[in-house]
Image 1: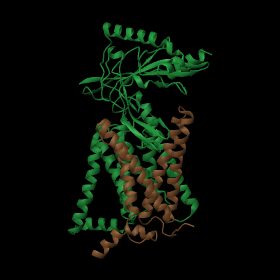
Image 2 (image 1 turned 180 degrees about the vertical axis):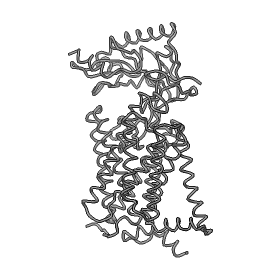
Image 3 (image 1 turned 30 degrees about the horizontal axis):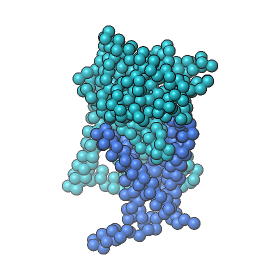
Length: 395
Length: 148
């Protein structure tokens, strides 16, 4: 077991060597396990009610009878409302008392009451819209505030969004009414999806469960919560100096092309030119043969800004020769388009990649080394703002 | 002119569930289109086909949500095809996840890319739903009915 390195510090959570820490967007936060149990208990409760109704229990007979009077869509809606209610009740059990637990409890009660009203044939529609809007937008606001969404949270919002879609279906026919209801549903889904992204990327400031976490799509290996030793610092300095010297010739993309790097169509500020011949050549962290060169388009043309070393095989752990200075990382949930072949983003909070693309679940480990003079960090991340200023100064 | 079976029923029957699910699925595709537009900023011209494809999928799904309410047979068939594509890509992702990461899909993709398409196809193939579209039972359903 070891501490985990993070871009801004160290995460207290511990993992086994060989495991990664990634964004909660693609995980279920451990404290949310009770919510799963609560959802399963709801199913068990439904089965028990049906059984007792068959045996003639008067209250069960009345409840099951009322449920059977509902149309299929309203039965479905009742299950959606009660499932969300059960999940929120489970969240209360899984967390220590806080402002959030009060919100979870209120949500659980409100959703239960609306579900009950629906089954009992009482006026439910207005209340359902109100409670569902509040629950969904509350989650969106929490995400905008930097709370990292997880798989359970997004699944619960999906349930609520579907329920809202039904609740917003007008009772009276009419194209305008239907259009308004549909448009409202689309808007709320879009807000929820964008809030999910903002929460996931903004959670680097510290969430209420895990503290500081990597952004979506980044996997960090176990690290060491310490300063580098003198030997590690020396190794890192030597590797850096060797790489800068060995790759200086690639300032000219034509030289890189002659050595086998794919420099065609250099665009943007983070263009990776891969050399297929170095991809599985058995050489690791070799300053003379980096697997990728990184270019940015400056005011006078392409500028070599760094290199990216890559491990040969999936699951191979990169050698941290500089200790905490040279931390390798991998990527997960990367969307790869087939039309044309290209990386086109990350799996969305709703679990989709763009149409016609597949999800690469995990990549080989890699590490960036930035060769520009005066760069703030020689290894790891390069701040966009610093690079933009640097390139502007070249004009 | 395509065959439709107008109904005066509002919010009753399984078709209303199908419509609601399609609306959510189409909205998710709208979110994907916005994401792809952002991702496309770094990709330049490469992004055009993928943005067009994702936006097209979003518009088609939302339009099908509307048309299914009018009991359009063509819409019913198109939905079954589209959900088949969604399932195919989910299967590819599942195989990649098992092979490369030694794990399955997460909860949300299971819901949106497996449970949702299967539920939609299943509901559209139900005998009573087929009847709403003016279609008779499938051979299998007819055999089953004859036996019972």
